[in-house]
Image (tube, rainbow, N blue to C red):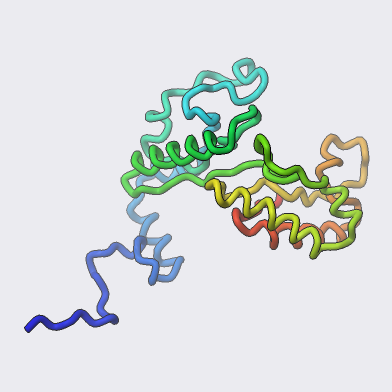
Amino acid sequence: MIEPVSETEVDVSVEPWRDPACPVDERVADLLAQMTLEEKIAQLGSVWMGASGEDGGVAPMQDEFSGELPPLDELIKSGMGQLTRVFGTRPVEPAVAARALAALQARVAAASRFGIPAVAHEECLTGFAAWTATIFPTPLAWGASFDPALVRDMARAFGRTMHVVGIHQGLAPVLDVSRDPRWGRTEETIGEDPYLVGTIGTGTCRGCSRPACRPR
């Protein structure tokens, strides 16, 4: 007679870092202990490939300010930490960019002996900065609303949009307290009062929890 497997039995062949039942700190420690120095350094890197995954023209005059990138397979041979703005600054159909991101992630994961995908990030200061995406009011208008709950609901809308196409991280909000209108990024800030910036910024991050916001 074959004895049924108890629900409490643990598959000892599963490495701790792959086991979702293990505490996060134990999983991280186990994975880091197995990674080489090159693999750890690779997780700090980022590459901006554009929606095609190969062409380098993702920003105006890019070639004037940076050297030519090595082939993608060479870049990701030890892994890759981030994929920068795959939806990019050029008008790219959302479905095309989503497929390109999925393909890039598959290549990154396949190149890593641990199968680690990259973190994909995009701009979202006034909503998901992609072709045909909805444009929302600027952060100065968020501050003028004095309504963190409304701002939270707004951020939830563009956070959800990014999440469904595979974006993990939104580059917003800007939490600098602007006191001098001559500063070049004043229009990206919420206002000049620290309490207002804190409450509205908190509402933004709570709403944009998918992908996670990274205040800067």
